[in-house]
Image (cartoon, rainbow, N blue to C red):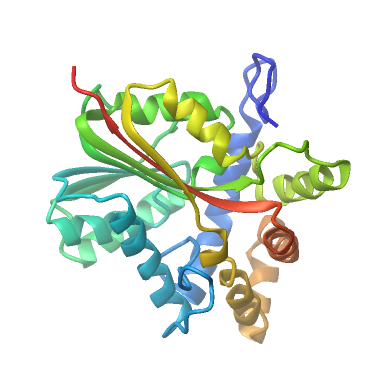
Length: 297
């Protein structure tokens, strides 16, 4: 599934970025509804190693996912953090508060960036956290700027995965940690069937994704970068129950009305939920983690 052409998927040969615009509109339209229903975190939850743990609430499972990823990545008191694909600032504020660090969040959505700034001020973190609209494939930061580059479920939106990882590594300080979690598909051997490819294409269309790759592909890309101690993990079973909770929340009449009035792209996102559940059930969709430490210069 890794593209071989020089033009990234979702970007026209003329250089126009229709995919970027679709992603922006999707989150501009849907973020307010998501916050009303789910709160500040726009990502999966953690339901135990085997996905069978009883959780206090879906929101508690989302916070637990952050903590489990930090433990797995052995993150140790970073002082400057970059959150790539920050949403409305949930992870950014969580990490800044936990480590008493400065943090920067970037998103393609102006609506998300403004909401994140408001939330930062409300949390008393306005002097320590900043948010801005920026493209993760061309970040407006100097080399060697951050102790921790954190990407929680944004890699799937990137139309050039290799460039994305290079940018994350570029802005990372020597000795700093790259820590990401992203949607993947199963290993590419045996090759994906026509039915599997069609299933993925539906998800791409509804969630405005260019394509996803396997965790093994990410590991191979990371091996070509100045990263040491690269590790990966498949947490598909631990997060798959999240989609059952999404369905439960969507059955609320007020939520259904909110989906219908938020815009057609939000409706399409709701239509994709059964596809994600089936994808996890068959093993086609995987939830991958990757971490590495930037080599010294």
